[in-house]
Image (cartoon, rainbow, N blue to C red; front, side):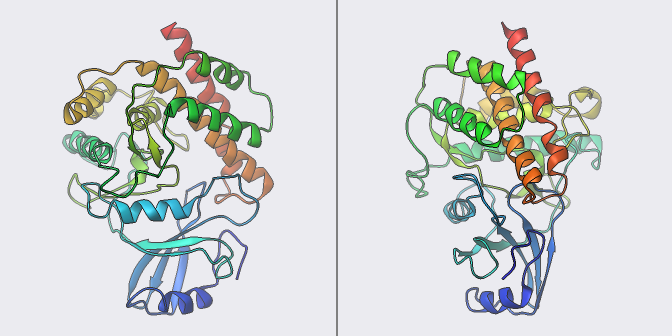
Length: 343
């Protein structure tokens, strides 16, 4: 067993997986994927093929965070839906095996795009990739949570009210300094909360470009990754979060398109993406869009503050955690500017 976030006891792990996954054959090697600030993820190369392992980081964790068991449950539940996911092989809650809870899923060979300008693709292929991305998101929100066995996957009631409370508490738990823009948001959000409209569905919680694996040559998603923040909630939270990410400046840890010309790139505008989503889901219009965007900035800032705190404490998944954490004030300020713009 090891408590090092960046390494695994491969001999012990191989012996364990040979008794849990049909056809698994050791020995194996493990290579940690670059990036990722939450649950360390490894490529396992076994004698019979490749797998992916996601584990909780060792050390003290915030309550409810790093819920790899919830990720595993979602992969199993979505297996027979229109939402493409990796195959879930095994969940291990015995922390003695590698030092923390983990699960193993299939390795999907494809493309992960980190640049939302899709600079790796010809211009004419960029819009189809975005169209597919929105199609998959709409399919997720159309999943029948009762048929999928996910009716108890989250709490009922006003999703945004719960989320504002949750992420305020999480932010306070990880706070390292006073950030005026975050204080503004913590006061503004509860005071401007839309009435609960009753919408509820499966939400991903971190739906962005680099959490999708695309087919190597086609605008087709092979798997949606990183379900750690998934829950039952308001479907428009995912759409607003995705559009919010694209509003960020390019070149950061989460790279956006704020300083890019989307028309020149061949990338759909925010209005076009929202319209496409609404068409797929039969929605006439979206009210309170600016609130959803502002909340998304706040929530991401709170998440990133948690990354910063783990970096300072020395148990982050990436050595860039403190650098990533410097984005908190920037994201909060963008939200405050949106409040000032919308009035």
